[in-house]
Length: 526
Image (cartoon, rainbow, N blue to C red; front, side, top):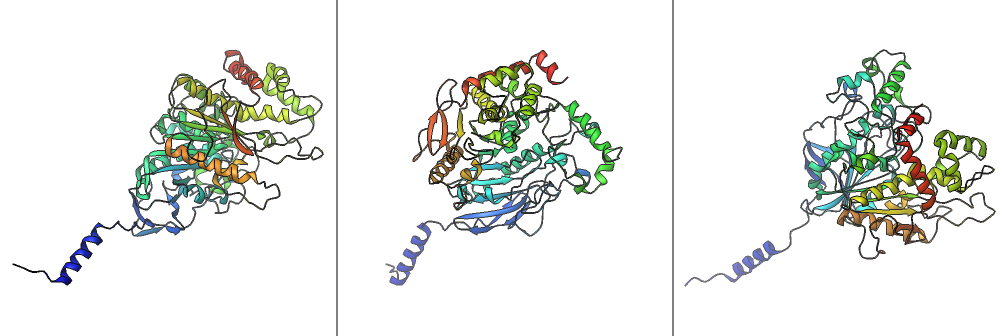
């Protein structure tokens, strides 16, 4: 008979216990992606990576071309600082450069097998400005709610959207423009291939954005090139359901490829150049716009990235059918109506809406003596409200993936003698609430801000997790159904209500339907 030494028995028991004990969390600050090894940093409960390249720098001969796969590197690449923002007017906090195709990642994962849902932020800025390094959209708070938060960059202005016959001729699909959208698609493809290294689930990706970012979300939802790259979509003050028109107006911004190419020819000539090759030799800062609005700086219906009129594509069921959460702010019109003189405003309505100007003035109760909130509401709906409502309606009609509609109206009640007494929530105000990055010391801070911010952040991250916004701690938010009062109002507290100005919006809907008739098309492009 063999007897074991008691000390050996204790040692074996310790070994068995050690093997059976839970594994220590992985160090996710050092990960391997397809290009090489990345070094991030730990920030509280998160691991953060900044300035991760997802494409080759679009410089030299790659200027005005689709993004190319990123190059590999040897050794370890430090991913500790934001990459530069795209070239634009102004001075973004991280600087600006033509070499700007980078993304940032905040992950709460403890192991690369965690399979957490992924939220991908697309910045706004009228397709002429924007940065993924803005402190307002720092991903810390959203990521701490159990999602991997990614912010991506894309080219803006003429460097992101110039169309020209020479550029179309050198393209295998015979199209040009839309490079900024192709950048977004390239970033989503990189995320699809690499996000699991950061503990994310490549099959649970939700894209979200505001203004031009929300419009981008809308366009990606209709682009066959983005199929399968995301499973949910959130648009804040976005949507692109208007027909093409030249000259363009907010909400009717889209050009055809032929129209954009014609403008591109004029753009090249404005530099005294005779070819795209000459422009590619110029310093990139030459193309920073010096005024607003910026020409050659908007996506176009090219038949490739954007196959056609998005409203018609949805009617035909030709879109990426994923759940959507969409909404807009109560006083978006503040961004577009700044002159108190009613005459140019009324003249502008007649120029824009033609024979529908008077019916729309009546529907929105617009005075020709004074510009009021009602006047701004028409511009709000023409640019954002009608597009968002139409998106939800069109998606609900197909009765497949649901749509959730919201209305953001969180603002102080201004005194009657204040010049702001009729003001609501302006364009972009909701961003700080969603990201929970509000300044508590601002002069118009309210106690209910924290309630609204927590609710929005919870709904948004629930949507990424479950494909719907509902869960513990927030009021039930039903899917949108035309005719029902199930719009979620963010107004002091989350609560349900009807589509705002619904009867007036129906008149606006008649205008957009007319715009798609032969008569309407001929009138708009005369």
